[in-house]
Length: 116
Image (tube, rainbow, N blue to C red; front, side, top):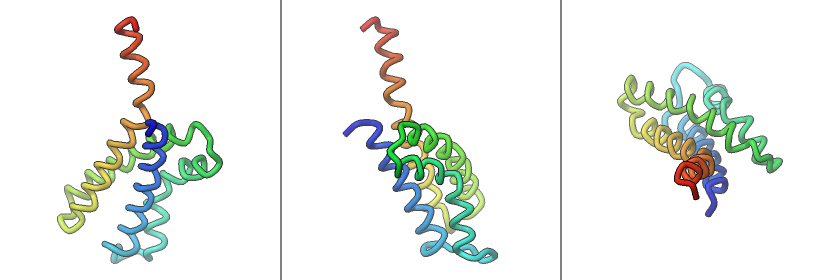
């Protein structure tokens, strides 16, 4: 499996986690479920649309969104003990997505540094 394919899978998995979190597993008390899911999913929407049209920049924009979602996961894990497991899953998927999206560039840079 290529790093690009793994990044695409992680984008979809992160979107699925967000939808499940906001609608089924731990819906918010103050906002409607659909609104909370839409707001939480908003950073990933460009990457999802680019995945649908098979654009090469989808993994880049997914990684950018993952940086925001990582911050959200850390703040939720810190402030909401009931949502700690979901926030931990968001953190892990976000970190994995950033590494998967960056893997080809990192590998090329290391190969160039070694002189291969």
